[in-house]
Length: 244
Image 1 (spheres, rainbow, N blue to C red):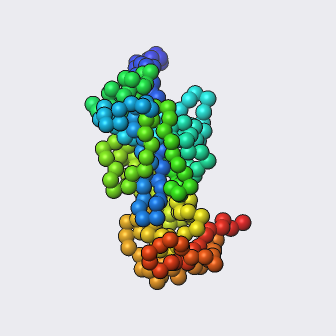
Image 2: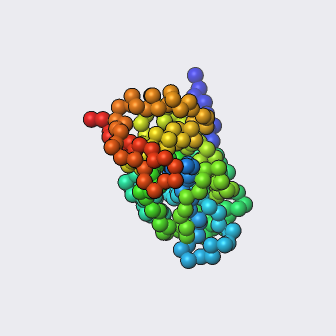
Image 3: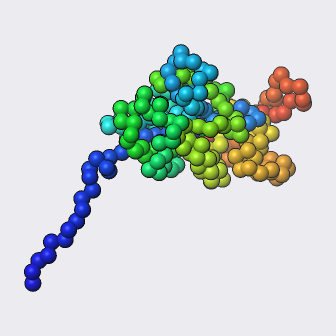
């Protein structure tokens, strides 16, 4: 029987080339609202009133020698000066046109060696207590600031969608793990704790049942202290001690 060679088309190697990046959705809680950390694309000292470059979540390309977790740590440190915070990988974003919106062309041309190259990004979310961290911009971030989740503007690339996906994963994880304590200060009230749950889950919780359940949680410890400097009746303070 005669062998028939199959005519296979080998894709052009350059057509399959893409960059890999990490984008970090950093959530913080100020006691009242859930906030997200945004950077202003640009360089320190540039005109802050300019709309040439959009706000974005902290993100950058992965270096050849890095694994993804190392890249996430470095990018947060480089762009916002945040170090040693909670990081959780949650989703990959790989739409072919995700970085090619008209609004992003100038930034890509200025800051990327290959501005026409497709970029696949790995999303991480981070959790911090706002009172314990002070972000500072550097590298190509001209500003780093907290923004209430409900006030997030139109962002660079597909970062609005990345934030929404990060929030959805946070909702799922909060129901299964004690990661929510990463968002709280070392000492907190049960009112703050309930408020944070309600914001993340997007629903109201019965106060009596919530407090009954919290007081049974392993690691939640009541302190012999109350709030100070408040206009209302001071509430008892609690802390969380991770069980052994």
